[in-house]
Image 1 (cartoon, rainbow, N blue to C red):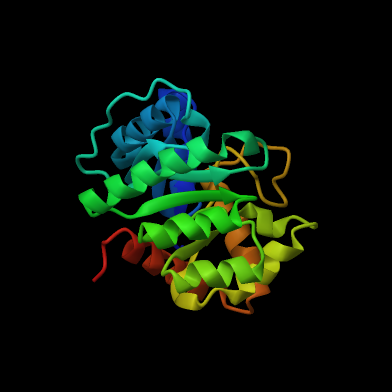
Image 2 (cartoon, one colour):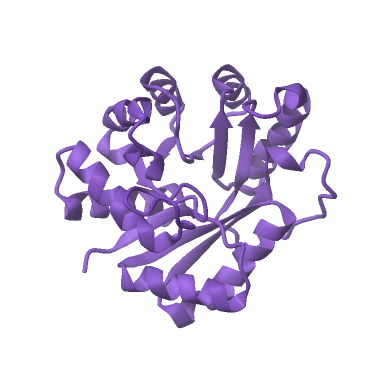
Length: 249
């Protein structure tokens, strides 16, 4: 069975639901994934997934941090011992452009933290292209642009900064022409895949809560789009994920 790496999965359910999702992932060939936080509940979900990974036959990397919606939250101290990345962090002006300055402050503080810890970052960016590029140039960082939704020009600028670009199930949506164009811009050695579960289930699973097992559909679609054998795309994106997380020199 071809093995896949889901570089971005959230776990919002309880113990049994998390264990079941991990088991289904393993059965689908998703033997590696990164569990990603961003809020108190999502950071707790990361730990829950990590505790249940071995029993399910999946290797889980941990990523914790504070996303753009946490500017007014009670953000306690996080223990980054053994953590693979800081995130998700970033900017989203689609719904909350009025909090721009505070989003930038929160993102900047976490970029600096990741630099001190020597960790990659996992970045969310939506309708904030200029500010995202500006802060990443101001605070040079390494890591992943997750669930990329921008156009080719923005994609190239992020590639120039050294980031990996992660493609989600959005690439399968009929209206997502810009994402498909960008997915063709990303070179083989910078391409990642993700679910962003439980959000953004790919075609043909639209209408369902997304889960890591569904990344197979995104991977097959992307392989066809790039005219690459599925097995080759799986191997390339898995290798890139390991490199992004410091597992390959």
